[in-house]
Length: 99
Image (cartoon, rainbow, N blue to C red; front, side, top):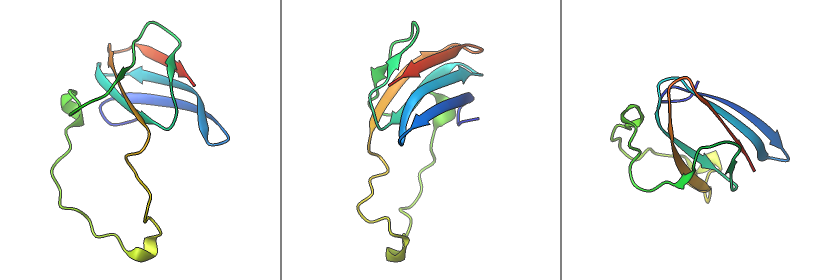
């Protein structure tokens, strides 16, 4: 179960997503961050996401910037890298995507 009421089933090969199925439990906007292009296997349109997520269940509280030890080995890793998509969902509906 992912944040905002989505069940996600992923298929991987060589570190890349080859298939993705998302079931919407509550409906509303679903925002995906992936490392490669996705295409819909159905009738949903993926939009490049911009700005804040309009799904009210995805509100992230303001927090102070965390201290990360140099020993963690995270220097140079961009956790915000990849492609960011939005699509609208209906409660109880599943959506499928492929690379």
